[in-house]
Amino acid sequence: MAISKKGLRTITVNNNKYYWKFNEKVFIIPNENQNSLLVIDFGWYDIFLFMNDKENRPPKFYPKAITPKFVQESILFALENEWSEGTMKVEYREGKYSLIEE
Image (cartoon, rainbow, N blue to C red; front, side):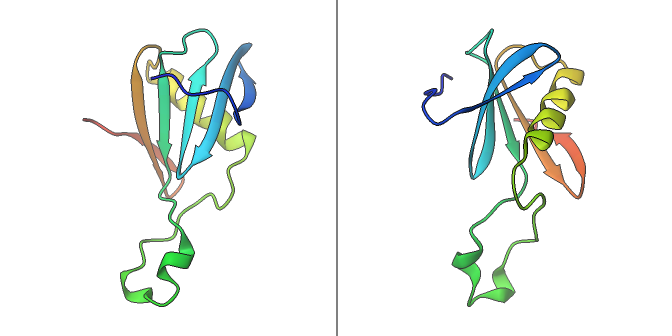
């Protein structure tokens, strides 16, 4: 799945360039193989949708802001789990990564 490069940020991890952006989830593509996609779901939701409905509010999410360090750690986790081709979906909850099987 190719992502338009407009609005993407770049990061270098292990001498490889990656492009990433946040849109409810973090989407990462390597420069070398732009048919690969890494999707990080960290539980983000729009807090304003639940301002008056605290009973149905989803659990709190972390991190509150996506930083290059978080993106780097996510890429390293994916590489350790043999991400190279295709799409890999990862969930990040309470400081721990896990693969999402589909």
